[in-house]
Image (tube, rainbow, N blue to C red):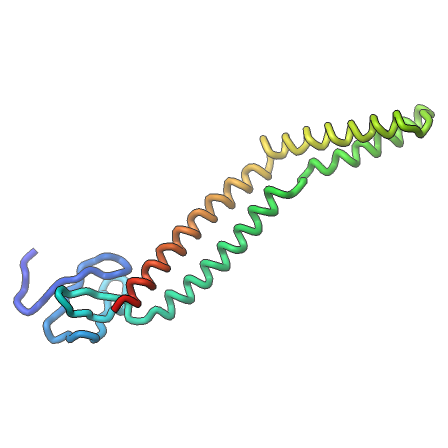
Length: 168
């Protein structure tokens, strides 16, 4: 790369492409990246630097990102805490008790109640295990976790860009 007289080079804060900054740009002047269109402020100190000129759009993007992170965290908490199809164990226990009383003529008592509770717990745990292992809950948690990690990384990147822009 041949250096032109009166032209210094600095990297775009957003896309990291090199921008040629002519000597006519003084400290505080604005220049636009030809690749990504980001507006920069020229900082001439011991070396030439470019910082983002307007952090308003970055702050708006950060606020939107934080809303996405909150939504994903709520979805992940809901997916982790939900009983999913395991709650159907109670229904299975009720059907069992109704069958025992209605069809078989079993007396309603402590033994039927304890058996029904055991069936509810075991079938609920087995259904929830199946949901976790093979069905939607596990894939939802993995998907939401991946999206959440990406959103947090994007938020960190936006915060860093705002810090760099404010460091003039």
